[in-house]
Length: 239
Image (cartoon, rainbow, N blue to C red; front, side):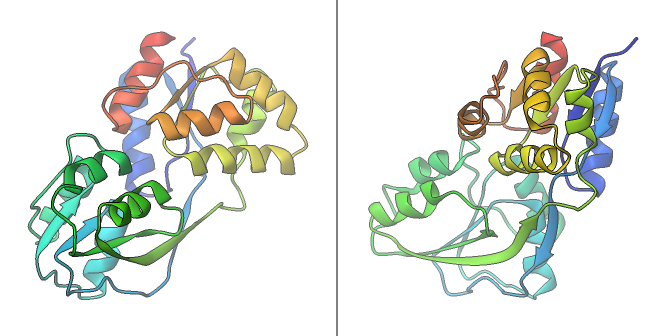
């Protein structure tokens, strides 16, 4: 019988893509979206020397708002870069490390005295804005959307609590926190954490790993490539 691997991507093409990836790897996918998007209606500033986009969702909301960048456009990750290009924007920079700290390292030697616009969700890491501020940039952050937990989320928490989960792929600290909140609501948090610790848990990036471990969830794999396909492959391989 195929192992069951849970993931928590938004209920759109990202969840569909993840389902296909996990199934093609020979595992049974359990899609339990832990994030839903609530747009704020705000638009990125257009007068910055550098504009940083961190997600496909942010790109699409900026496009819908009619945003036109004035200067360099920086993308965290290939998925964000691909979304920019497919929506008619240029991409001037993609940091080698797909993380806030990687972006700070990419720009810190050239942003002193420059305006940097950061357009992202309401749960963006302070590592990015603080790091750019420390490098001497004038940082402005626009919150394009809020990330909330869907009311129906929690199937994976029940599966973990009942010992029916073999693997779990957490793509952000917020997915960890929302998983545990959903388990709390169902009265199975302790059992769900125990179930995760009997399974193979993977996270994208060290910040997500640190969040999981701070709540007592052991992390088995953190792939070098911060993409879902690499995360799923690492979990399935460990299984």
